[in-house]
Length: 348
Image (cartoon, rainbow, N blue to C red; front, side, top):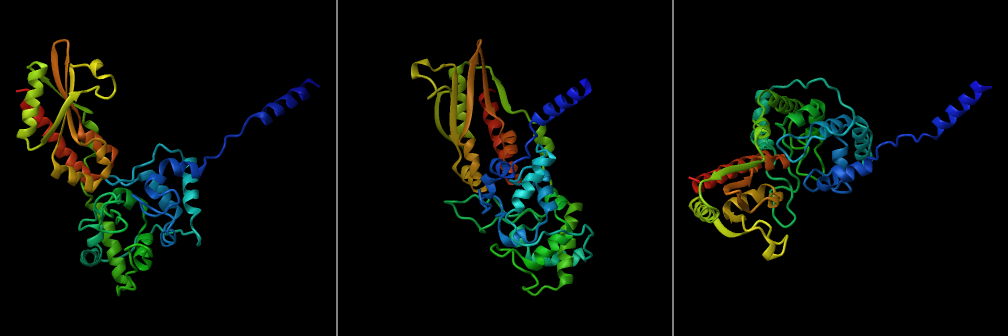
């Protein structure tokens, strides 16, 4: 009798325990993907995932690996922080836009002549995907600004893409194209199936000559650049202003760091931020990724504390990690060098 009561109690307890809810793919998509790919998969910064011709050539495994691997050096980040169930929920949600049959691909390599493929790639593919497979320039964010193509061509010489796409998928894309994008069918353009195999073989050869990325060097960077000044606050601010002009930047203004956050008479006079800009540099950066407006124009802060004066700025090379854009990394490296030159000139 006691054993039966214990069994019933256990059943009640277990039955009352709430089951873990399955991850919500729509919610995960809205949180992680919609900003780039559009709330309904119509595209934006990212490719239009709901496009029928795109859905017709991708597999579940390609989506899965793309989520996990991302595209290093491009805008698409890696979502390795998502667990397996969350990734699968995202795959199911993205595939809910597929109106055709599910696609699976063989993992066997396509046999072709990469040397001939390189020639065909230069003639047919490089104008969109880049001479070295680096992909279309910029982010695809345009809205009020022009761009070369309605959809940014993906980077083919990219470890994330090459780890996600099988040879068979690349071949089918070349054979069928993506209607609604600049990616046409190369069979219809007159290439033979062997020609296409040669191009696929060349694209796969990118694995042996990957484009350089500076992930390791970025990881070692400190988030703030700091230099000690031997001068008082007023002299240091004047020195920074002069150094800004000497390094071909336009000086904007100097104001208390707390300006706008507290009443003017409450702002700490020992913390001053200086704003400056180089219009040519600004235009280059915005053309690559308009989101750099988050940390432009340039600024350097001068702080006096306990009789010591420090000159500091955010490290642009660390900020560039937020954008996962190898083009922008080059400009952020240049910006870092400019900051250091200004700060060291001002504190000599």
